[in-house]
Amino acid sequence: MVGVEALAFSFAGLGWVMVAGFVVWVGRIGWAVVWDELDENMGMVHKVDDGGCLGSALWANSSISCAVVIEVGVLLPGSRVLDSSHVRAGSPFDEMPPKDAAAQGASGGIGCRLNVLPDPILLRVLCHLKAWEAVRTCLLSKRWRSLWASALRLDLRQPCGCRGGGGEFDNHRRAEQFAAFVKHLLFRRRPLLRLDALRLCWSHSAYEGDSDTWITHAVRHGAKKIELSGAHHAGYPLPDYLSFVPGDTSDEMRLKIVKLIRVRLDGTTLTQLCSRCSSLEELELIDCLIEGKEIQSTSLRSLNLISCKFVDDFRLDSSNLVSLRCIRPFGYVPRTQYMKHLVTVTIVLDDLCLRNDRQWPPKEEKKGRIS
Amino acid sequence: MAAPESGDGNNGAARMVTLISSDNTRFEVEAAAASLSQTLQLTILDGGGGGGDGIPLPNVDSATLSKVLEYCIKHAPAAANGGAPNATAVDRAELERFDNEFVNIDQSVLYSLIMAAHNLEIEGLQSLVAKKVADMIKGKSPMEIRRTLGFPDPTPEEQAEMNAHMLEYGWAYE
Image 1 (tube, helix red, strand yellow):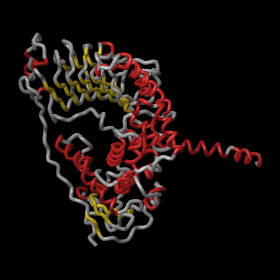
Image 2: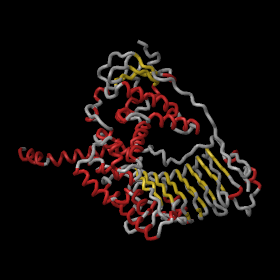
Image 3: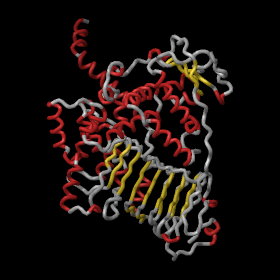
Image 4: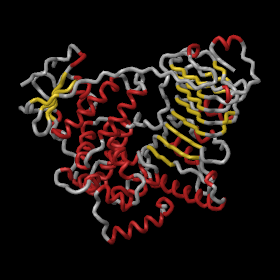
């Protein structure tokens, strides 16, 4: 018995460390859950049109039209301050401990007091910063140094210098520096920490990694939202669809929202992306060169196609779609299958963007399509 | 004392609850608005805070609580609609304008708000104040960030660490 106690005592230190570690871990998971629906920046459903359907979507000839339904909100009356009175004893909130030790005595700027706030608050702040803004907070204090890389959402949107006119050598050097930075950042993140969202600009391949590497990392760490923009790149980059798919099929598929800006999507990429990302619910393609022939998915609920270039006979076959936006398609207009769950449709056509070698069958004209 | 009329919550529409700040000031507010707080939500669902009783909030003073409730009242209708589905562009723009003005406040008030939002678990407000702090950091040099947030000037030791760090991440400071 004594032996057991001694053993227990000798491991007490280790035990406490483990308990503390577990509490921190559990706490983080708790926050992660709270943060699930946090992201407003990458939300992709924009309700411009309300209650329409494909057949009744409105547009004017060769002009851009959006139907906006305006509702007048009714504000609730303000709260009234009553007279001060008794405080009921025994409320659950009596036990709510003052979590901020410094709040009572600290004076001066907000910084000193921020320093002692719980991790979730500081991580929330870091979520709103781009990675190279977050790294600067390292210079504030040790506290920030341990946190800066661990935000649940990473914003790595460093544009490549393709269109900036920088020399090739200079661009290459910057790409290498940036890749090294991102590698370091991912390394500095707390182990087992989930990564909820990743925003990226296309990056040139570098020794330390490139955008495909980082997307792979994010997907394997349970990312729900991924945004990739090739807007600053000279051509239309082609992302690797494999990076959006978890390598191990036993991994839980969490990817729900994908937003791609100014990238090229060939047939294989588009097909594989839609069919293998079985949890994908929202897809937003902006300014993309779509070479594939169809988007086919049973999981997609929201699809935004904005200023994308389509090939002839492009088909949209996504039976569970609830919201569809197709704004200013270039070349050809996508053809859609019957979608019984569709609630919101916004279609904006611009004659100037469409090729005139397409003859629409009469049935399509009835739906209001113009060529 | 003006007693809340519909404390039992059976007539749903305008049920009021009373919140009591740390300095014993009582605030009467619609249950829908107070329910934006995850911490309060369960108590309110259980019928707490109505009638003559209030829900004491020993961590929140009256100035902060009135500010928090101002936010809750403004955001309650949108939250009741389940977020965005019925919101129009005009509504959203109005809320955005309100939010921008709402956080245009003194740092000490902002700090109290951060703590209150955290303790009361008001998701939108937590996000809003975090964004405000992030905005205070954005686009500034490390020294400017320190000054903006009121950090004391670095000691020589810290300065040396800062320099080493800036060398390591040189490009991030360009």
